[in-house]
Image 1 (cartoon, rainbow, N blue to C red):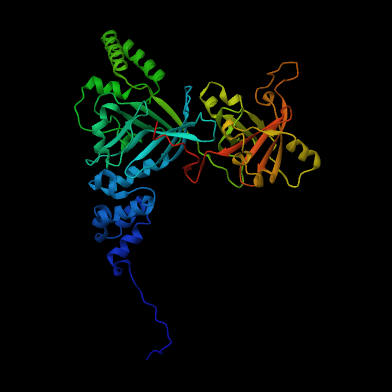
Image 2: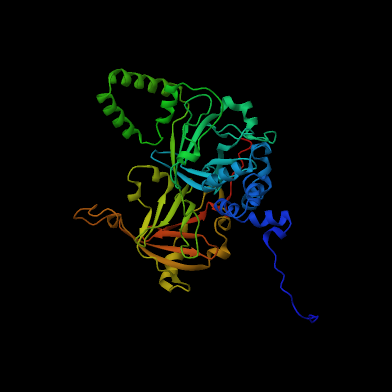
Length: 456
């Protein structure tokens, strides 16, 4: 007879647990883990493959705090399809910048909506304050038929009201929106381009190409299908397509006629186009970290009226570069930083009297709307407390050798970077009598100081 205080080990298998507990445990796994688990027993095949409760639990555990899982596709789609779609969309969340063309709104911000992904253009306001404008222009989601749709508003006039409960309801304003393809090229490059027809059609499924494209019902002629697959902005590159077409026409019977038909279809398609393709590159490191406190997206005034966006990055050789975001869209913009320094060693406070004088003798640039209240720009309690300082010797000839030739480079300048206790920082060149203070554009995935444009 066992003693009362003797502990007996109870052996339980996974099948001994209640079904809701099994689903809860399985919801922590990835799809590949689920597939491996299903191979262990015939009993689990239907549970892992067909049971919507499992895939709902997996979606809800991963994204339930960010979006309303049961509203995607009006709650009528397979949660397994939803899981794979949201897994693709997840990489979009965050900041992207325009690439390959100049733009006054080069910054794009993707965020979770209740039943969609929303893309917004983010740009500085012109109100003389630190407010930024966030203008939604792209909505991505799934219809109740399980079709991936993407709608773009070229002029930024359409708003999703509370009456719009799913992307099917966008049909009431479809004439104001442009159906587009959102093509994922790797994980850090996205191409957004108009569909080839009035009905969205996917010539490359996500499973086959790794691209996310618009899908919906509708018939398409073979020549229109061909046009869509080689439309500008898609892969393969337009130049390579032209080269291929040239040699194909040279070696194929009736090549001249094919080339003429191709050029005619190209002109017709361009005539129907409402919106030009745009390329975006992901800003991976958009926020500061303890190891890289200056890294990320910042905003500040270089004069009293113009708010500008800046991107500070740590390069591969250990330097720190700060660039205006609008200039990153221009050719050779990588060679024109606001400042660049190879010195990344901070000097902790307290600073020497000489360094204190360098800081105190300079004025902080204030926007006109806040000129009467310096505390609104940088609270005096934080402004007077400098956490640490960085000496920089920013010189263009360090980036572009021999730019100044045999003469002294006039752009060479010594400067300082001051990191404040509140996590922001300011910088100045010794040749100037002012300090440019920078604030974060976003924090914890949310835009800071977003302007209210509802009345505009």
